Image (cartoon, rainbow, N blue to C red; front, side, top):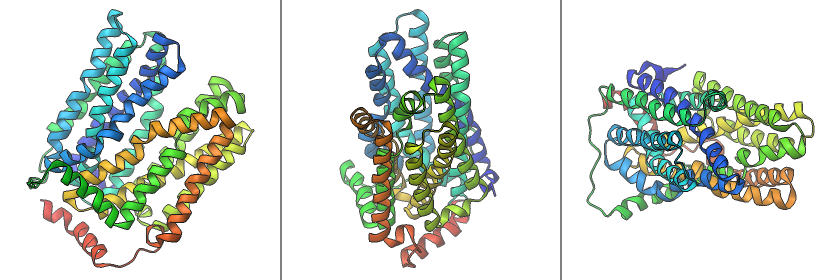
Amino acid sequence: MLGALRHRNYRLFLVGQIVSTIGTWMQTVALPWLALELTHNGFLVGLVLAAQFLPVLILSPFAGEIADRYRKRTVLLVTQTSFVVPPFVLFALTTSGHAQYWMVVLAAVATGTINALDVPTRQAFQVDMVGKQDLMNAIALNSSVFNASAVIGPSIAGILIAVVGVPICFLLNSVSYLAAIGALLWMRNLPATAPRHEEQPVLTRIAQGAAYARREPVVGMLLLVVAVFSLFAMNRTTLMPLFADQVLHVGAHGFGFLLASMGLGSLAGALTLAFFPNLAADPRRQLWMAAIWVGALLEFSASRVFAVSLVTLFVAGYSQISFVAAANSRIQTITPDHLRGRVMALYAEALIGVGPLGATQAGALATLLGAPWAMAIGASIAGAVVLLVRLLRPEVFGQPRKTSSTAATASAGTSHRSART
């Protein structure tokens, strides 16, 4: 239990992430609020949110190549230092009263561009810190930090915006990255082996990651399912306000409780995997988590009782994080070290990059058919894809096949710590 905390480097990393993630969530509230103050236009606010995620979809393959070519700590020092700039610029602009909408969009694009490089590198860096043996525990702890920060950060931001104003949120987010930078600088005894610099064109190396995902059915299918869920079943930001206002009639106050309920469920799921990481190693449990996730979303779409909706969202949050964290761990465990950055770039595209597309389709369906039908249709499509994968590729969610590659992966995981010291 909590085996990742045995590693000094990971403890430093986790502390840095706690501080910087809270700051990030504060900006997540402040940025669209600033856009709303400047434009009073919901569509333009949505464009700001899309601007943060589109770079991940477009640039992640190139970012994965960088993550595999250079030392990951060095890359992360660059990204974490770069993250300081956009929020500080927004702080200066909002404080001086010179902020304009196009500046907010530009800052969102800059943040998303940095994030495109940061996400796959940060994901792949976890193995360097803890090894494959404690990887699932590290992923679960990171998810716990993310979901706990999703409750703490917006709460602090809401109070500060009401009392002091928007600028302070940007300043605190900028300063929060100093904790992550300091943690990276204090790390010691990281893998000394330099990444291999293969003399091949960049596009060829990028294609190697995609080719590996196609050859390895478990990796490829997990990436596909994560992308489908992200596209059709992770649209709470788009649909939840509509449920609160038009379906459950609970207003802004109820909207906050709906988000909090799902966030608490996600936190509970992440903590479960943190204390019992072996649960994520069972593909059949992951299948059950996907099924429960779909069922909870369908029940939520049909519910007109606020208390029932809160319970179903808690269950949906729990099963969502259980499924996604297990997919992350299985993909990283199977993938060879020299391809991990490029494969995790594909994972970032699947989980984060398709977000704007998912929000667009959910909004369009909600406009045509209503929020309940939009959520029900999305959940049904995600469930159908999982069922097809289970039928066509039994090894993805069933008993794993014992192959030479599986044995080699297990052996590599066992010997990782001794080989890396």
